[in-house]
Image 1: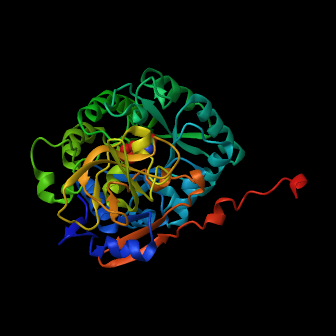
Image 2 (image 1 turned 45 degrees about the vertical axis):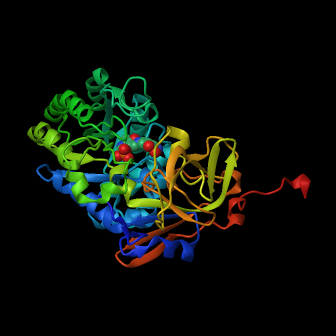
Image 3 (image 1 turned 90 degrees about the horizontal axis):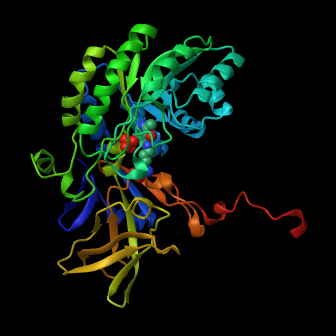
Length: 432
Ligand code: LLP
């Protein structure tokens, strides 16, 4: 579900025209819908209501302070993967005691920072990390809450670059080793065995891998609860969203359509998983990222040139892989629609950015309504893993971000001034 719709022939975010926003704030521009964020959160929250649970928003998906504030106001917790993300959450008004801290490379400094802030738990990815956390906690004269991330060795059946729960991946501790690790960790004075965590991958569009992983790991969670009194089990994130026909997916009737759509709803997810989790009597944590923000954001871009080369038509736009790297990096599909619909014939084209890389494209050989120089387009489903993966490659400033709520729109990140890109650089003394 989302709130990007045509009104007449013009695309709106909630009650605000995207053409109006593009004129006011320029392009490329990310636009986020607050109502979509809220609705997605509530929908997942309600589906999981039979369980004592906490959705911990995966900050990496979209870490804009205003987005984080929406999640905090909804009562969500946060899944952070760096000291920087933790600081962002706190800056946005989130609470440390609702934060879990994941990631395979936590530094001593980050561990100390998180302990001082009073986070809910570390999700620990290796034995040396457990030892380090114990040591840092001892130095600070405190006890660190920890959960081991179990790698259940279950294939998520998603893109290889976002599969995390098999033994080919760097994440977590192998299922067979986990009980031994808890036994050893229990002897350390500065560790508090508070939970168990897993995350098998991202953009899962089928519920079976989730079910398989929960069936495999739930008995382990049960034993750890009996033996060490753990209080929570985090089942990670990974709920996939609709990328193809993303615009149509904003229509509730479309979501209810029973068959033939590659989609995984929170209701289906909950129907399969709640019965397996309920008997544990543990607090269940969720770590949704993409599900909450993905379809809540679009990237608005302007057509700079139309170029014919041989038999191909290239639509060259002012956004590029620097604003949305997903097509280049994962061959990801993002729907592209004009902000102003006209009755024009379809043209097969590549929509590309201006970065000097052949991989810098948004789509290839796709039939799109014919566009002209100066037209505005929306690249859909850009709310997750869009702005957070942006770069300054080719000295392109980071784009602006706008949050819409009803008929209100606010700039929630200014466009980066170009001088800021080299603001931390300086000449060597012998060059001056
Ligand atoms: N929890 C953990 C431990 C994770 O590693 C991730 C994502 C999540 C939760 C949230 O997953 P989600 O609900 O968003 O699927 N850049 C890639 C996605 C990378 C996902 C990394 N981990 C993309 O654009 O598809």
